[in-house]
Length: 229
Image (cartoon, rainbow, N blue to C red; front, side, top):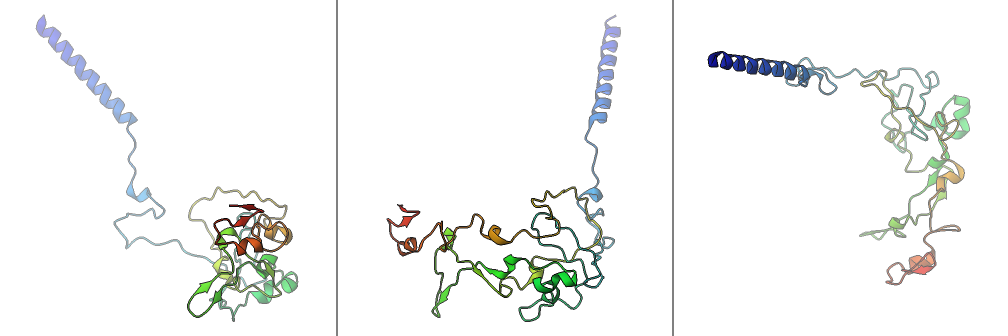
């Protein structure tokens, strides 16, 4: 009788162990192959069969291509046309301005260069041959804004922000832009008062840093916003 009881207990324990093993196998995290990791989808130890995604830039001439909507409000628009022979851009050789200057852009069917590119926001340093000195403390946003009749020297390198767009997607893009202006997908809103919205300078009414503040820049009791600090 004792022998039968021992056999029964052993059989029951083995059954429980088997059931537990089956349940564990069913709930185990599925294995992930190395080929499925990342964007390449090939063996990470083998390079001979790994090819990068083909880049297919637009080949249509300027004026014949379709404009690409901006990625978000005031995003630098992508270049939809062929750039063969246009790069690299230098301050003395910029073919972009022949079509994109505001006075000709509409007739050329091109996106006009916005007002922000004809504005100088940079403080002017002095140089005595040994040391550059800024006219004011840039940490306090005390810069002067100057409107220009020509393209700002800081804006001549168009391809620094604007780039050609390759066809196809390496990964799915679920981003949906929420434009703050009605025509934000096609036009820049960086014009007029918006250029200086929230920006306080040493020029004009309401400036955060005044000329008097600058005179007391290194004073322990300098004046800022009409008070002492």
